[in-house]
Image (tube, rainbow, N blue to C red; front, side, top):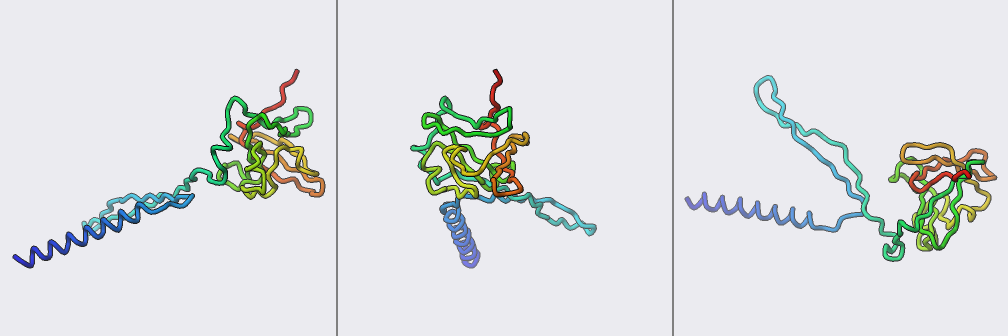
Length: 190
């Protein structure tokens, strides 16, 4: 009887130790990007009648956490003061005008996906533009006029994005960039 009690106590110690380890690992600091990997079990029966549990893998999802580069208090935007990029109907040029009284933060992405690489940024906030904190390949600007020897041309709508080309005077081939169409509007005709 004593051996049964000792074995039970040893099992309880092992379970408590495992719970402490799981709790400790579950409460650690998390990185800025989380990978969520989900598995489910499927019960399969072989011909000899023995059940085998096989794990089904569901692809991992990448979840972006809140942007921590800027100080949110200093760069909060007010929807009443939003400014959008303007597409000129006569020549398809896209312009972002420098306006200190407006709120705008317009990213150009490598692909029509907000989780793809940020290629260019137009923002009213100095903390977004100074020293290019988002490491945009083509830089960060207050306005499209600040880009030297570069024009932006509207090409087409692509889902929730518009495709534009960055055309540098020295380059033969333009570079495609995608902007959320919520931040772009067409010039109104009179």
